[in-house]
Length: 121
Length: 107
Image (cartoon, rainbow over all chains, first blue to last red; front, side):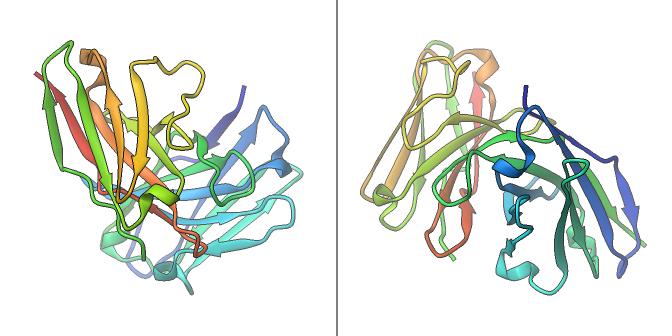
């Protein structure tokens, strides 16, 4: 069965960066885009961007341009999300989610368990 | 960016019908997906492509979309349906938008 397993909780200082991993299993890793979505405490879901695990291409929501990076390691079926220049309002649970296909109209059909990132001085 | 507006909360008695709306400009010509998020858990897909149900989702869940409003309907509401619900749309300009979210309370 499809599984996305994320790395554990992180605590970071303002200005630092965080790198969260998402290990995929149960399907062909290069066959589906992976999205990252975050949720601040008590708030709604916010789409951050996607990565194409096949070619490594990415696209991000405009508000994250310049401080968001997504990479992948096909040998371990893992994608990584790195967010830099952290601020207190980056405190959130970060989710990876598998696209049913290659982005666009297809849904996000499986989600990781979430990783809490706390930014605090 | 594309804005999707949902009512903050909907309250419904057990066995009754809950309707959750998602308002957006010409949403009827876009593709809408719906997610259920129980407290402390990751979102779960409950409706995709406006009206299709993934395997394992009860047929009490249904969806529709027309004009400027998409609707998720939960018939015969059960206590286990208490959760937050979000719509998701790809706005065709490269980006995705989630609705503001609706908290469903079962009375």
